[in-house]
Length: 175
Ligand code: FES
Ligand code: FES
Image (tube, rainbow, N blue to C red; front, side, top):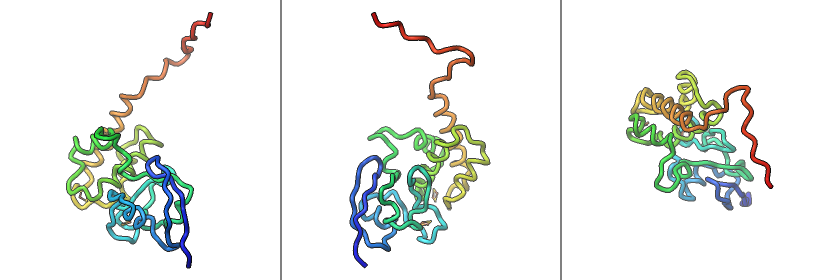
């Protein structure tokens, strides 16, 4: 069958790729240099290949590249701002959530998706979110601590809401 041209946004940048209909998103991303997308099993079991597709975690070994046409992809390469780590990455380092590191890109992305929809998750919610990413090294205790710490850190950094019932100050009228 013929090749396809697809367009997607990867970490905020527009990308245009020529792919075969059966190419996996995992293979295309790695071919294009997104090495943070790990190939662990190619059967949808380990979660190491997870990326965010329109903000939701997917195992990229279970998605055809053609299915990403017109969509927004996030990989771990887009998480840090230059040399400045994202608070989730910092929390994983600070709390010993990284050992061999093979699962870490997927854990970071899954965590970002979790905190985007549930800013202060319970430990059970964190464990549930991380359960799709297999980690041989950490026993999950440290990654769970890291996610809870990242949630707290991000909550502290958020501007406080005005007290209930108090109207925001009005701007002085322009003269
Ligand atoms: S490589 Fe995709 S789930 Fe393991
Ligand atoms: S840190 Fe090694 S597999 Fe998770």
